[in-house]
Image 1 (tube, helix red, strand yellow):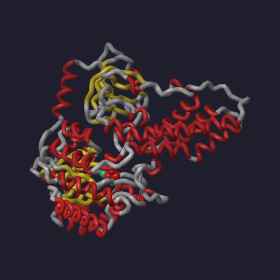
Image 2 (image 1 turned 90 degrees about the vertical axis):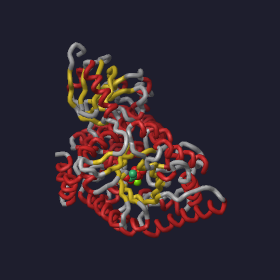
Image 3 (image 1 turned 120 degrees about the vertical axis):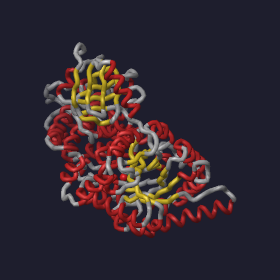
Image 4 (image 1 turned 90 degrees about the horizontal axis):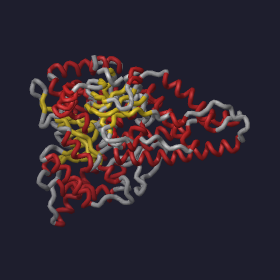
Length: 566
Ligand code: PEP
Ligand code: MG
């Protein structure tokens, strides 16, 4: 294609631009099976091979999950739990076993067993349709185990590569090194496919859903990936490249932003550890809206010490030099397990011991250690900017117990003569109970922060890691929206500030609605901060309030979506 300058339209998945060399990636090539029937296979041997492949795939997924949790994010890692569930899905396992019984080799049995479910998902709209990619990912993992082939080397691409592929699976994407890969372009996929979510977390410019036209892009073509406008330009001219580079840098707004009529909205970043602070600063975040401290506990054999945590918190405060840093006390349990912690296991971890329940229960010692580190950090140079919040609060009793713990830790530090201060304190609103108790909770703290990832899961009764109900797990459903509105009102009535740190806050199209609902702070993955800030400065608060009012009386998700994305 190289002679001609071509622009291909797609969907922007990561709002950044990158220019580099196209590398075509075809993950399935090595997995092509010939169509020969295999009547002389021994079913028992094939069954054993299949079972071994499933075990191998599970072990591999567990490693992938850990790596993604550490390098990308816990939420992004949850996709691999869903993959384990696909491996165990009776529709698939029964079909494989039947095919083996009928005399097929394990490879053919696997390939055939996945055909129907993949087709079923492909026929569905939106997020459900995108689950077909996840199924292909699981199928190919099993085939690789059976064939003994290695995954094509996406981890070893040359610096400056733009990966061009029909589709990327979540594990392909999680493997990309953001230092080397300057862009991604895929023919298939949507903004909410797992690969797109992972690309966003890694801040890799990405355009997905380009369609058949992408086939014309050849290995070695110079391409520009414009993830803001959803465009892929082949052989871009110098002016276009310079404009993209300028935009990427100019997009970053430093300092506080306001709406056109002067309402201040803080736009902060969600971080999972010290490594992510620099990116958050670079992307112009005003501070940290959610520091997921449980990540400090991952990938090690014992909990971090008070000193380690103190240093991590002081580093965050110093990185933002007075910009607010909201630290969440560890939220372990649910889908986040830490092997060396003794978390009571129930049948349904999302409804079991997690968050503040664990902190006030068997992990009380660790909770107090973390509070010591926090109270000490609050007394350092930028310590005034520290805020601390508790996850998964449902009852006033839990909040009272957590606040009592802060008081007793402060008293102990006093007795020891250790310098400390009590930071702003807040509650994460992520359970329906917290919404119903929002007034009473807000009365007792300085702020509330809405965690829409969990709130949507509990309000909609749709597990956040279950792809079968992914479509229901959407904060644009009126029930979730009304829960958010109610929380904001309760906070305002109690003179507490109110933020949002769930994924909903990181979708730029939601910004006007959220500002209109009255949120004071929006916190999202660092890469989306510039796009969210951009939306805030384009918003007029008066109009946003009208929009929010209309959204509150919407009866369906479709109506809400039509309002925010007209
Ligand atoms: C949330 O639930 O929206 C949230 C921000 O917390 P996490 O995703 O870490 O559970
Ligand atoms: Mg949560």
